[in-house]
Structure formats: C-alpha cells, structure tokens
Image 1 (tube, one colour):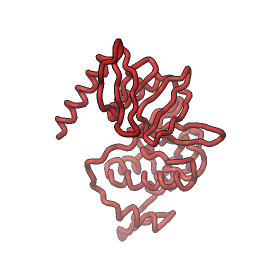
Image 2: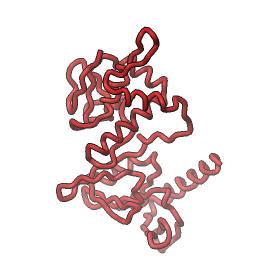
Image 3: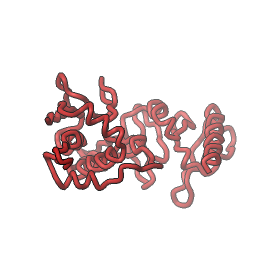
Length: 248
C-alpha cells in the first residue's frame, strides 16, 4: 500500500517528514542534505543522498517503514524532486513468498539501495550545517554556514563574508545568528561582528580594544574586538584548543 506525497501543506492524517518549519517540528525522517542550488537536478541529488544515508541506518529505516508504510507524507519543499518520494519507495519495498524483494517503482533504485553498505561509522551529520537562501536581483543563492568566515551587522541586516571572498546580505539580525550559530563555533566579538573560531589566527592588543586576525595571506582580515567581548573570545579559544587536544 502506497500513500501520497503533499508539498507545502500537511493534510489531516498525513505525516510530516520535513525540517523544522513554522508550527512544525523537525521530523526524524527529514533530509539532512540540502540542495546546493534550487534546481531539479540538485534537489534530485539531495534526495538520492538521503536515500543512501537512511539505508545506512537500518534502525532508522526500520522505524520509518513501521511508521510510514501506507501513510500520506507531507514535506514543506515546493513540488519537484523530494526525499519524500524516496521514503515512499523505501516503505513500499515488499518481499514475496520466495523472499524476493520488489520495488513497485523502480528495480534500478532497489538495486542501488541494496548495494549500499548497511553499517557505516565516523560520519559527521550534514544536517548540522545550516544553509541560508540569499535573494539578489531575482536570483536565489544558497550560502552554507560552513562557508562563512565572519558576519557583519548592517542595521536590521547582516552581511555574510565567505571563503571565496564574496559577501551576501541577509535580513537576519546579528543577535539572531549569534544565538543560532554559537554551538557551531561562532562567537560575538563586537557589536558589529560575529566570527568563526575556525578562522582565528591571532589576537593582539591595539590601544583600548583588541584586534583579531582571521586567515592568512591575501585572505587575511582584521576585525575589532570590544572590551566586553574579549573575555568570551579568549574563553572560547581556550575551550576549542582543549577539545582539539582531547580528540588527538
């Protein structure tokens, strides 16, 4: 028995399988992989990666099949390639009396699923890397948090400065990103700046305030560190250094 997949709404009786959205909690079956761009090909690739990811987690896959088989599913993404289709497919794979597995949608898809190793380890959950959509002149660009070196406040907006030397303006206050990205290694250093600890090179005193240097070579950037944020920066740097030594 196969259910339907709905986009942009959650009908009565449907199971939401997307990420956190207004009024909706993140589903345990949400896709941890985000498309690199808003195209059908990129979305299909993200759905394929989700299929391989969940098939490498037999307990989660078993839970999905037990909970979602025959149910209508809903996701908040727009119509098009979606990991919800992969969930529907995985939950309708059945075995006949002889133990042969059947996928009512695609034998090739089934072969790819069965050929993927069911036990993996040492992975980093890609869902930890937030992606922000940036609108400019009618074009949407997806900027991953991991690509951001530092964030600069500009009124009610913030400018994301990335490793490729570009910057992107988003309508999110700096204080909001400070709270959301704290556990991802970002620290507030000034009323106007938030920086990634992974970019840190050195901290030096410069009169009343300190200055932090990010990166090296042509990508070197120096940012002010206010007195009120200096102690927090030093504490976060010390903690990061301790954790790095512990993991060695």
